[in-house]
View 1 (cartoon, rainbow, N blue to C red):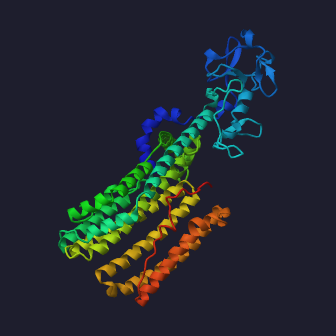
View 2 (tube, helix red, strand yellow; view 1 turned 45 degrees about the vertical axis):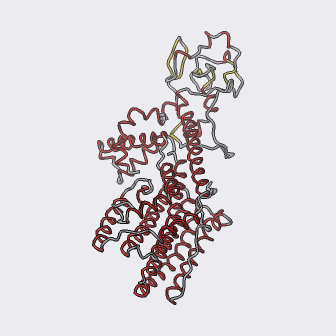
View 3 (tube, rainbow, N blue to C red; view 1 turned 90 degrees about the vertical axis):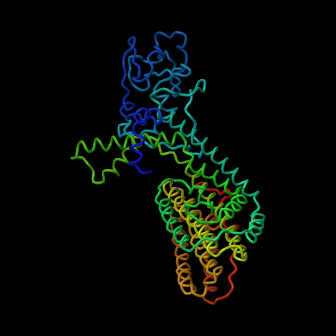
Amino acid sequence: MDHAHGITNASSFAKSNVGKSVFMLNVRSIARPRVHLVKNHAYVCGEDCSIQICPRCAPDIQDCVVDVILQRTLQDIAEEEESLDELLITLPKCRHVFTVETLDGICEMTDYYTKNQNGGWADLRTPVSETAFGERKKPPVCPTCRSAITSPRYGRVFKSADLDILERNVISRMSTQLGDIREKMTKISKSDLEKKLAATASVIRAEDVTAAEVRGVRKGRMKVQRRYLAEKTETPLPVTTLDPGNRDLFLVSPNVGDAWSRTVKPLTQLYGHAIKVATMRPAHTKAWEASWSYLVEEELKSTVADPARAPRNLNQFAMQMARRKVGQPQPRADKRFVVEAFWVTIQVRFILVHLACSWLTSAGKNKDYGSMQLKMWALFTTVLLEGCRRDANIAYKVAEASETRRQMTVSQLLLMRLDFELHQLDYRLAQESGTIRECRQDLAGKTSAGVLKVDQDIQRIVDEHKRILPQDMKDWLHQNFIDTAHSIQQEWQKLDRSIRQATFYEPVSLDEKMDVVKALNFSE
């Protein structure tokens, strides 16, 4: 996220909500709890005084255990002492009473704060969401009745647990939605769509356009494409880029665009659903970003006010300090599904590209389909693939920012496939247009460069992956990257031989070898 933009938009929200969204407890307030006297008894500052229990004024609960560690009861408490094992806190939810030392242990405060050499609390610690046994942490509860512990002293603890529950809800919701999309994709017959489109393309009459109009559309298309590529939002290209009737990008005959759109509507609808998943922003993620942005702004202000202590890289320092002061790790569970949603949109477009090529072949045999219209259709097919490359790059960047190495590797595999698909399309268009002889030398040079690049990419990506996840070399990396990458490499080599020797090239579909819409195990 662009921090300057985020700071501007989120500052006012954060000022009123930072305490609600992400609880930031100053470590000094727990290091040595301040106490105040109420009816001659010491209480922890910040707790609700109206519910705190005085040991002398509560004869009915004198035998209740308040120190779980030593099994001491309320009557054993030395009320004149102000140490952690003598101070009491009454829990707001259930009104049971325990010593601060007991509750600190139950809430596992050492997971949220570090200690100094003297045993006192020293600083904030980024909490973990799992136990040592790999289980999800649960909100802390009263040892007597299992009610939630919501005392202000433990605000950072129970709010961290609440955020973790929200993350799990997000995971469940996004996973379900993507699962529905995948299931619907499996029910769409690509061969049936291909037959229907080929039959339509072979007989439809397309309104021809002039060469000047085509040049004008090319310029307009490049302008629109640059605008899309310049956007830094984590959003796939809009569904309008899948419409050949989009006059901002193409000049396809209206009846052709309508016939195409009606036939592929099931695919474009799934594309739209995947975009909704990719753009889903959970409320707690927005809250974290708002809090972080506000703290960055405050850190910048304080540093500018005292130039003598300003660090060399002010912006980086401010962002690091803000992340530390937020006190909670950035929510990232949704990012995994954002990446997967990008993959689904790319998979849909791979199918559309296959269908568009089939349309082009059939339309080329139709005498009522003008040559300029064929060029516009070729342009539409190219834009589909270029949009895939743009979104595969974004998916990789999202995965990289989330430090999900497996998703980074699969996204890089998609980019490798897209390099090949784009070059293969250039070769096919040269064949369809009858210009293969004139283009052969240029295509051969680009193919040789592609063969060399794919070999280098495979080695680089494998090295990068095994540095982070060396255990993946045994199975995962072969199943999800190496085997398919070698298939792409072989296709480059086949195409290279075909171009240089002027022999027939039969393309092989990579869909079965690389079905990224299947549920993969990305636990790292």
